[in-house]
Length: 247
Image 1 (cartoon, rainbow, N blue to C red):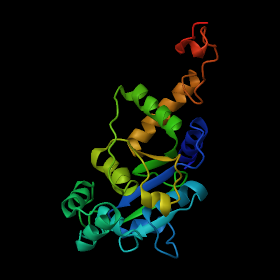
Image 2 (image 1 turned 180 degrees about the vertical axis):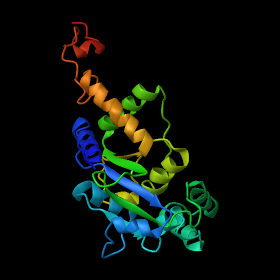
Image 3 (image 1 turned 135 degrees about the vertical axis):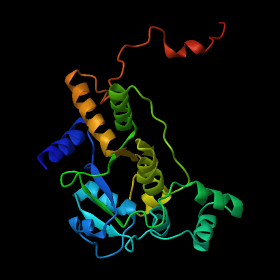
């Protein structure tokens, strides 16, 4: 626990995060869900992530306790049905074929693949993933840290809605790669994600590598946060592009 607490604190400090790193685990057995508290009301996944990031809440979500209708399908808690099509048509398009494609391409877990989800503070348990709520400058430093320790670049997958669930943890689960997603309308409306916030999801092994890389980059003064602007004035006035009239 001490190592996890140190990792959480250092990630928050080095990256200047405004909120705490969030730990997420998928569980194949319902018994593991006793590690978190059951909320009084069913919550969406993005709401649970936000609560963990702000107040270190540790919440359990059994398969029958997911408050978001679409996320129920994404996490394999129920099969797709006609209501999914109607919902996506109401939200995004009058074209039934396009709405079907939007649903079909979303990364999803198999029906019954997991029994529930645990969301909480990185201080308390070793997760399957961590979620860092970042701005673009903080995301840049994470990308640099990943590249500095692996030599790899990153491609990010995003789609229509389901940003924290489908294009967040499920994408990382299926690819075993980090994924940076833009919070969807639901995450903004119900999870209260702000316009400046992005969700960076890292599988646990990637998270440990990034953490190690960030520590080393800080030691060698290579963390570009904040990015120092250039202070030298241009040698030519900016109005040089305007042609002076002949006098």
